[in-house]
Amino acid sequence: MKNLFNIHPLTYIILLSVLLAGYFNYFLIIITILLIHDLGHIIFLKIYKYKIYNILILPFGSIINSSVNSNSKTVEILIISLAGVCMQGLLYPVFFLLNKYYISDLSYNIFLNYNKYILLFNLLPIIPLDGSKILLTFFESIFSYKKALWLLNVISIFIIIIFIIFLTYQGLNSYLIGLFLIYKTFEEIKNHKYIFNEFLLTRHLNKIKYYKVKYVKKIKNIFKNHYNFINNQNEEKILKVYYNNSICKVFKNR
Image (cartoon, rainbow, N blue to C red; front, side, top):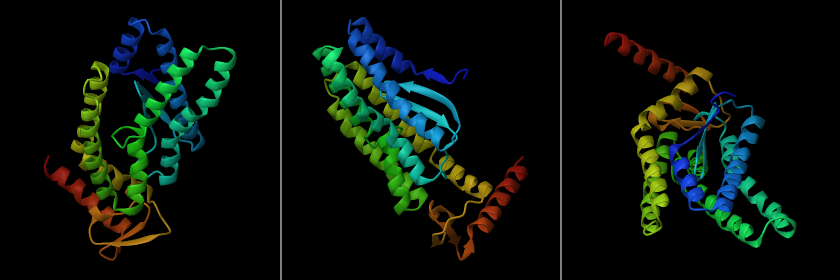
């Protein structure tokens, strides 16, 4: 459990600013929402027997570093990604009952506002939010994996631009979150080639088989949820040649 949880500096800045402003109720409620959101992801990661290496706490949720990879089952990734916002949805009846017997109307209204904002925010199709993972599961069911990644990057940039425009006059904390999202999206774009290579490598090493068959012309057109025939040759053979050639090039260039 050592170093399982890490808190991003941005989270410290935003929550500390809320606390120093005297909004203790806001602080407790936001922390509760974030923890419950993360719990949803963790429960389903454990149900599907994925290992959790590290959890980075952000002001709007978390980034969970786990054994989930680009070739993990699409339906599992979809459910894990939806689990956080679904858990937030379960908070509504809980806080409704708490409002009747324990907490004030002010605290209840704070919960209603922030739970709504955090829930909707996480559903935005911006990297690395849950919405981007959900959208990718739909894209990869229709398009080749490389094209799915490219479409996600384009949409993420487009939504960020709209989000930044919306943030006008919303305060420093909102701009910090916006800058963080820009950084994560461009980091994803920069690593696009490596992400796709990891996708190919896990298929090659794990020898993934699917019942659906797809005929494609090039490696870059491989579909995730299909067994691919590339130029009428099965993907195992093509990927073996591809990685053998890559290894040879590495040693040749030394």
